Image 1: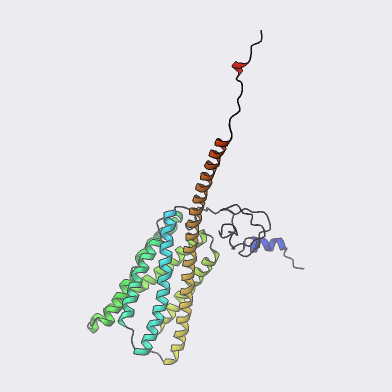
Image 2: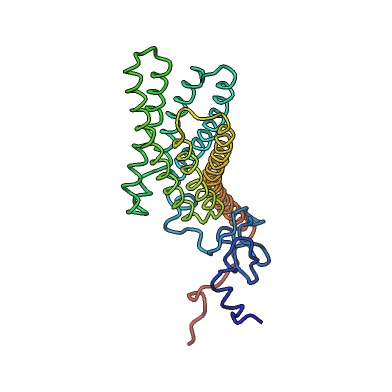
Length: 317
């Protein structure tokens, strides 16, 4: 028999709060009041579809995706959706550039213009998905939010400098300067991307999205490691290292896919909360209209009974 009691293990591991744990007591849904007894944490309520949270309160003060100002949630939903599409486009563009380089020996101008345009959309998505409310909820993240916003502008700028250096027909000296500047600008943008992961990690934790938190943590580790390893390689190396670089590209793409899935899950949570709020408002309106209709029908059917007032009673002599 283990010297550690089962009660102590449950306390340390928090099995009763872990995703997948079964609710073994009567517990109403925070949205519709449905009894969640027998259901698992992380599943959806069979009545209204809201994810079953570890905590009973759905309107946490640091939950920007499922509570708070609907306009903020709508903007974040839009930014998260755009960010998801940009990450997918970046991964597909990188693989398309690799295929083009293997076929023709150099990346095409279309790829350079496309990835630059994708960087512009990414900047817009980052500005939308990082509203001022993040700094209000987590004051320590306020400076990081501004750094992330400004640093992400380096993606289109750096990519434009790279396209200019490679396809602009400039002199060798100017090309070298442009290459140095684009490396510096894109490096700052990469650091800012890690800051964005930290911001989204805080937002996902506030919304109690455990899978999104895990995916963001994974992306925050794998993406910079693969990028640093690739950058550490010299420009000229034996062909045998191409296999290792291909493996690193696969790992980078895999981490970026997890990043995109995390953003998509967060935008789905924001969309669901807005839809649930709209349905709740419409339900209250329908209930109020039905109650008014029933009250009108009752008033037209039931007639008041004639009664004698106290003044109609004969007075005692």
